[in-house]
Image (cartoon, rainbow, N blue to C red):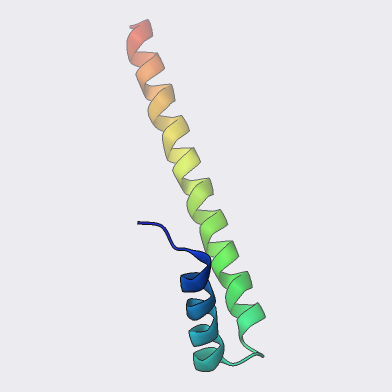
Length: 59
């Protein structure tokens, strides 16, 4: 299920009404940091699992 341009505009207008124009940049920055941290943790976990599986293959 993909969001088209019309749905995206509606969501942004609702966010603007709820949070106001002053809060949107701060909210966007917070969400960007959260997504970046999530990706970092997923990559770390992925690397650890890969390292563990490589060690088991060597045994």
